[in-house]
Image (tube, rainbow, N blue to C red; front, side, top):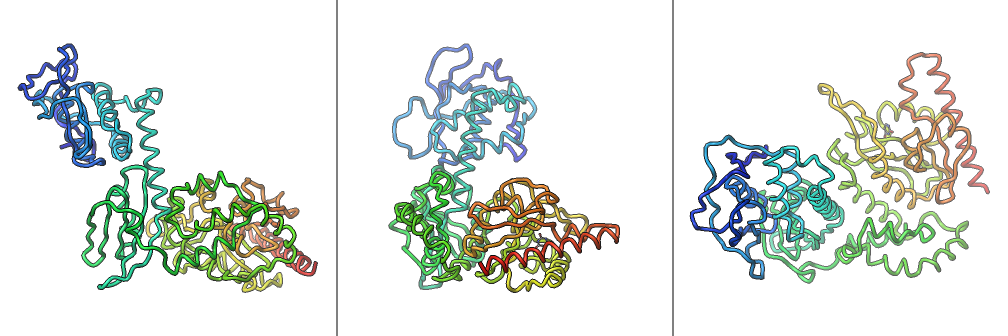
Amino acid sequence: MSDANGRFGNSADLFDSRLGLGGKAGVLLPDGPQIDPLKITLDQPDDFDGWREAARELVLAGVPPMSVVWQVAGDDGELFGSEGAVPPAAGGEPMFSVPKPFIDLAKAAICHSEPQRFALLYSLLWKLKANRRALEDRADPLVDRLEKLAKEVHRDAHKMHAFVRFREVEEGDGTRFVAFFEPDHHIVRREAGFFVRRFTTMRWSILTPELSIHWDPATESLTEGPGATRADAPDGDPLEETWRTYYANIFNPARLKVKAMLKEMPKKYWRNMPETALVAPLIAGARARELEMIEKAQAAPRTGGNIEGAWAALRQEAMSCTRCDLFRCGTQTVFGEGPLDARIFFVGEQPGDQEDLAGRPFVGPAGQLFDAALEKAGIERSTTYVTNAVKHFKFVLRGKKRIHSKPDTAEIEACRWWQEQERAIVRPPLTVALGATAARSLTGKTLTITKAREAPLTLADGSECWVTVHPSFLLRIPKEERRREERARFVEDLRRIRARSEELAAA
Ligand code: URA
């Protein structure tokens, strides 16, 4: 067996091997006669270990790719070739190893539904045996093809993380959370660990057409069962109502981008997600609603319906966000807070160490400076909504200290969705970007604070956005005199913001 570093056992000179095949299975040797290829049957469609073991033996025995046919146990259809043992390896040579990226690629690509995946991987392994750097040749169509397969598997996994929706089911011995999901590829076993880590304390089952997996926290065991249909999954639970309310509340027909929406949430998943029951009717009525919305724009109430429930559902969903890798960092998602009819909506950068522990924005040193400045400017923080562009604390460990690390553009973009949903619920007439990260999240552009703070911007929904410095910047200024000046400027910005907010309220 090869190990995690990708060693594939004794090396054989692949092209010079002239092996005795023991008459068990026919192979096509490089210059040999055309005879039956060797049929390899794997236990499961995602059987990486089985493939690796067979592939290693085949390579060592010098069996070229064209002489192997691969199948999965239980697959229909007669494959050309004879079932049989792999011929013995040419002995005496040292282990050969494959680069780690090949193992990662193979582990992902093997989960693809492409029937040729095993053969393609074996062809690449064959190449790697002759040239350890074969994987680096991006122009090689084989490498390209396998990378595409792996990418599609990763994408499918991402969809599964995002779109599995559990329904609560009461069973005789307690609650079980059950979800039905239809992946495109054989990813369920591969992704099981993700759900175990995420929902460790819940008893859950994920049903898919190919197989079902069940997690029992009492015994900490994950078991497999047969495939299921959607009819096997329960319908509805109270959470669904909240999600529907949420979508109905935040749906803004003027900003409807069907293509983007479909890309993020392909239609095939809609059936399993309670909130999407609304999507088709909402799209169908979008134009009419748009006109209605324009008419009512001025008078539209900023609360009503179950807006609190919608916000609570959104917050709850954010708690298990995996839109970027930062969910692995920090303790928890730090969501925004404040009244849902707030007229001023502040956006910071990301939670810091103390915010991460408290689960609330702006409670650490930057928060204290922010509070003091708000007070000086005559703004009561409790009347405003305060959130961050990025909802997880990104840090690097230095000794025992967690040192703030700036979120990158991809992380800001991934998290932007939450900020947009929060704004869609609160609908603030005035938004304030505290620093460049917040400005990027709100506008999609990289702005220079000095220039942007001169005049308000208009956001996509037509509301006003003011840009000012981030309170942490004020904490970092070393020279006292400059620090005092900059703090006074910040308070001045906040005063202008307050005045403008009052002006908008009076209009
Ligand atoms: N800095 C931020 O941007 N947000 C917080 O919540 C804390 C510090």
